[in-house]
Structure formats: structure tokens, C-alpha cells
Length: 301
Image (cartoon, rainbow, N blue to C red; front, top):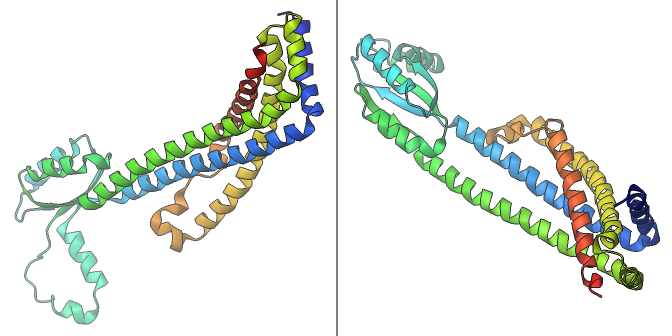
């Protein structure tokens, strides 16, 4: 195709937007709402996944060491635990430190009960965090086999709940996003079908004089792509405004939302580039493809 012909088709695409203002506006509004819904669904999915990850990071495994274990045995046990691939963090909480902390939290009356104690009754413990919460059961089972371990305490039931919730959430989120994209394509296609139908005679004449399908489709393709880009820009602005409002509420109230890890969600600025690119690509793609689909029926002469 010659450059002059391609420039002509681009101009026709822009003229089509102006000639069919009502249909263009309808397509713009539908695409705008669709992009906002898909965008928010994805942003909520990303942040909920991070919230679940924050909760997982706070899940701690406590390894209680047997009494009268030598320092060398303690060192060997620590090295064995550190060698486990799924262990991300390990620290020793000594019986001396535990006793000191317990005393500091007690009142004077409570301390009197222990002032004649001959020995510290508290055990040495290791506190660790795992990299993958799905492997927590295997990790705790392995630690229980080590020499010098009295018991292992871990939130396995809570971990199982988190794993199940994340699995269900991922499936639902993917289904919602796919459904919204398909609905957007169908609605855009049906909306622009009226515009194409109004120009069916023009399309038929072009076909009779020898115009190729690509030559006829390109103006509609450009028209849909431009409308999609405009809608994506507006959707990006609205999403940014709404998201930052919610973000400020969640991050400012530490007491209420901090317990659930909601004050540690992504800021919009940290996601600005990928969100902007995603909106522009999705808007242009849905608008262009949705418009092109509606021209197919009238190209069969």
C-alpha cells in the first residue's frame, strides 16, 4: 500500500469519528466504563495478593529447644535450620531474654512470686519465617526430626486457609477480568455495528469498484483505536483519582487497617507506568478489534 493511500485511510478514520458523533460518543462511554471496571478489578487483585503476602510474612514458626542442650548443639541446630531452603529468616530468642522480657511485663506483685526461683524455667526458642507458606507443613515436619528439638509450633491451619483463599481468589479474579474484556468487546462491536450499518451502501460501492477488505477495514480500525485511546486516557485519570482517594484512607488509619495489612498496599505512582501502558494498549485493542469485528458482515458482497 502506498503512503498516500495509507494517509488517506487515516484521514478517513478521523473523519468517521466526527461524522458519527453519537455512535462515537456511545462507544467512548461504554469503553470508558469497561476499562474502569477491568482496571479496578486488576488493581484490587494485585493489592489483595500483596495483603495476603503481608499476612503470610507475619506467620512465624516457633521451634522450642530441649532443656540442657549444649552451646555446640544449639549452634549445630541453628545451622541445620538455616540450611532448609524454605527458611527466609531465623533468630534465636534465648531463655535469658525471654525471662527478662517476662519480668518487665509483670507488676511488682507478680514478680514476688518468682523472686525466690532458683532457675529460669523458660526454654530457648528459635523463631523463623518461611519463604513459601504452602511448604510450611513440610518445613515444620523436617525441623521436628532434628536432634535437640522439643516441639515446633506453627500456624498450619491458618496457612491452609490462606492458601485456599488465595487459590479461590486468583481463579475468581481471572474469571472476572476475562468476562469483562469479552463483554466489552461484544458491547463495542454491537454499538459500532449501527455506525457500520449506516455506511453499508458506501462499503458495498467500494467493494464493487474493487476495494480490498483491508482497504475498507482500516478506517474503521483507526476510528475504533482512536476512540479506545481517548477512553483509556479518561479511564486512567478517573482510576488514578479514585485509587488515590482509597489509598489515602487506608494508609492514614494505621490502627484500623494496619492490623489487616491494608496500610501497605501499592501506591498509584509506583504502578503508574505499567497501569498507563495497560490502559492504552487495552483501550486501543478493544476499540480497534471491536469496531473491526462489526465490519465483517458488510464486507461479504
